[in-house]
Length: 499
Image (cartoon, rainbow, N blue to C red; front, side, top):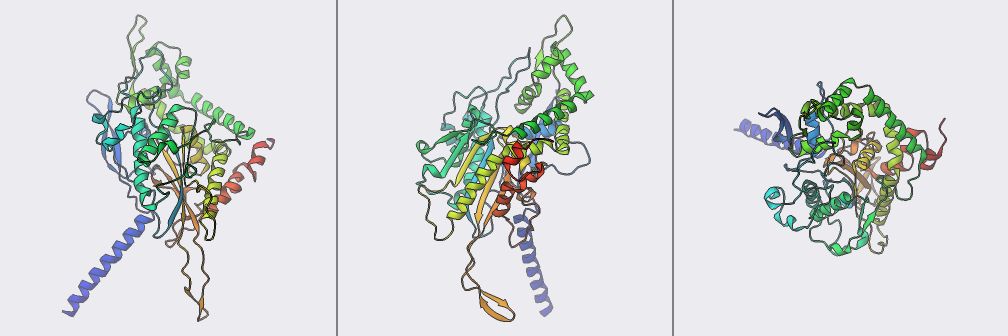
């Protein structure tokens, strides 16, 4: 009987230990638990390519593999088709930590093609926001938001993508009481570019994030530059790095014989000079067709023999070259140097806001009149989000999909308990009270990528402290990030003569 009782006790203790270990690993992101639907391309009966939907735990960084990436599969990830449920890691922290502020940058949602392929019809996309089409994706009351008629470059899927983004973060942060119900206009900062799709995306996001708030209190700031650089946009060195990067891109495309043959085949089908087709940037329109399940453009067969339809194989070649370009871009390093200088103004403003909020949270500090900017939303473009990822050191991350989001969270640890006894040399000694420290988390499309960033990658991540100190981020923005361009400040990096 005694042996049996000992065996049962061993089973119970072992099971409890395994459960604690499993929860610890999940909290530290060592086990991916984000259930995202995986979209697997398959060949349809008509010879086209469809997409199958199934459960997955896809991450924002491509998994190591021995085979070449499938360009069609990668394209479906870029579409971000709003037909899946998603669980995000925003709002997660150790027990008793306080969320002080959240800073979000989003890419606008799905849009109509910016370029049209000559001699082809515009894609027939349903731009209406109908309950019959989206009722399974979100609460029906969201449809009451009037986005009709939609802007020419924006479509209903773009609305839904950001309504869902907003709702995800609403559920993630509602328990943290980020700001009170009687919030002041100073506490929510919203900025967009001059393109209507960024304004509409921002409003859709906020409608999902704060469905009951007073819209009349909201002020939307206009950023004239897609880099969100405000008054610090002048930087000659940044422009030089961009020009060198564009030359690298051109040389890589010109050396790709398969790509050149593909453009020639497409030109013969459409009856166009190859140069004119390249200038029309056909991948933009073809992606729109793919994302919305439309057949690729066709033209009637004429007397000259031209005519027919563009094919999935041709699309795959262009996408393959784009993926090759991303690899070569990381190798060359020019884009990273451009990104450092392009995104410094935005990162510097974000760091300043975080530092100001951290200081205001210290004991004895008088609160700022009207409160601090505890939530910031910057609604931007792929040409904003991509360099931000690169500047943070997240160069292996996937190219920003439609409605991509980068989130910066500022956390404060609980203060050390007064009267806690330390053992030193065998004698008891009371320790002094220590105010809570501040920490930063960075998330990309719901995945915690903090310890992939340049400023936190070398940080010793411990079980007792799985977050990154805010001082690492502040030091990176104010000095360390310029080491890539052999400088110690933004001014020196921008205006130093090359040579």
